Image 1 (cartoon, rainbow, N blue to C red):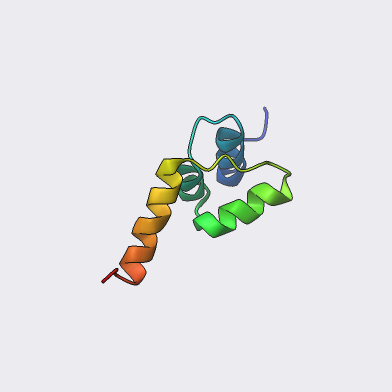
Image 2 (cartoon, rainbow, N blue to C red):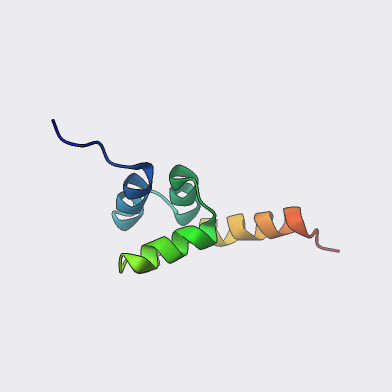
Amino acid sequence: MPKPKSRKMEAIDGYRARRISLEKSARLAGVSVSEMMDLLSEYGIPSNVTVEDFEASLRSVEKIRPLK
């Protein structure tokens, strides 16, 4: 029986195939967006950051440090 994929590998594959965003892949892998970007880089996967990803990053920053 084939070994099941780890959550990180599922996230990497989903992102590579453009089925899920960077934010969703990070959530699936159980890591931060920054850590997911590092992980993708380690596998040689280029970024396909979307507007959704950028907006999600802004929301995360606003939770940490609200805009005035």
